[in-house]
Amino acid sequence: MDDSNPARHNVSTLVAMEQFERYYAIVSEWSQISETKLLSFPQIEHAWALFKPHFYTQPSDFTSAAIVLSVFVPVFFVYRSLTKAFGLRLGKLFGLKLKDAAKFSESLLFFVTYTSFFIISATTAIHDGYMFNPVEVYTDNTNISFWAYFVMYAELSHYITSLILMFSDVRNKHKDIPIMLTHHIITLSLMTMAFVGKGQYKLFLQTIAFHDFTDIFLEGSKLVHYMVGDPLSGIPFVMFAASFAYTRIYMLPKHIFLPITQYGNALNDGDMFLHKAFVGFFWGLYTLHLAWMWMIIRMCWGIVKGTVRGDIRSDGEGERVKGKKVQA
Image (cartoon, rainbow, N blue to C red; front, side, top):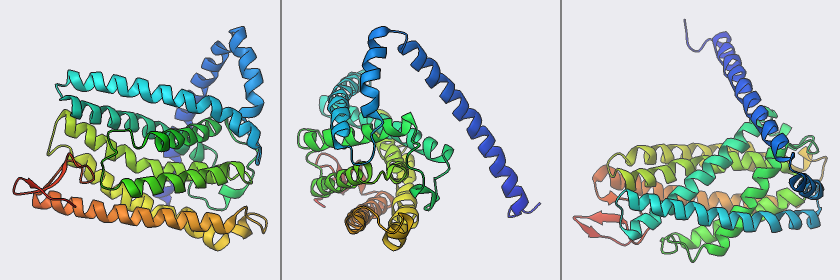
């Protein structure tokens, strides 16, 4: 039978969606059981009753957003510290030197973080029916699930803490630190506008899903690099390069940047909140993605030639020709 047969494709899609719905039902059941058990403690039930009205933030409710972030940001600082401490200990168990163990712990932190963000945001967007659907993204922003709110607050907290700690992390000597700083500022601005503007929550979630997917493979390649070494670390790096080109260079413009640029106002009842600012920031972000894509292409070419090992952005690793490091 011809694989391009539309009927066969539809059957495959239905089977995949049935499997996804079963997976989502199991996760939802676990979530409900956990919530029931937690709320069985009077202190937790009372705290959640006070916190809940602020957690389910309505558009332009800056006070509630600030209250929730005042809880999430410190928790995220603790999460970062604990995960990095665990990663440092794990790196030492693998026999890594202190400097490499510190880099390993950073990669572990970001691998766990971006994997969690992607799974929650993509699962929510697919289940609620607005993944790959620019029109649906802008409809009914009042019925947002708990996990959608959770990942939005977590992502905001992640970028706030990353921006604060950027110059104290082990990656502060990367050659692309100016691009990274600009990226964090632009991304944080976009998320803030989408979150507290006119409730562009679905836009927020879909952007997270596209954006964070590639970093899973990037951090995975670094973990493999420190645990196993080359050339096996090249496998997840190739997956990173391919996913970056597909999701950030192709899918983000197709499903988010271009629809907002051309139809942002029309999709928002004739008046999109800060439409021109959204367009400017989105295409600024895309410019940074193109700059990173050029670095990735250079690195891939260096790997093919055998002149690159590790991370081209790092002063401690990077591009080497005949055993000598070359400044990029």
